[in-house]
Image (cartoon, rainbow, N blue to C red; front, side, top):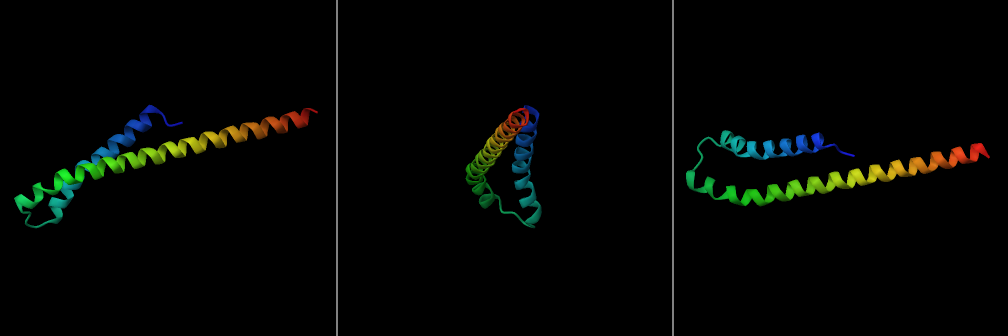
Length: 86
């Protein structure tokens, strides 16, 4: 199971990456125009939130699969121990 620290670090990493994207775009563009640069910024925000949601869903699915694998491993070890006792 992912700890709170891991979740917080993942969220901060994602938010830092989202915050750095406009800076990297400005650095790549030699002469940014002020009017067009202001228009795409609001459109980029919903994409970022969907990306965050997608990564959260993937993380939850991965956690769920890990839990199921642990349960199956416990069942197998318990069954093996029971058969060894008999």
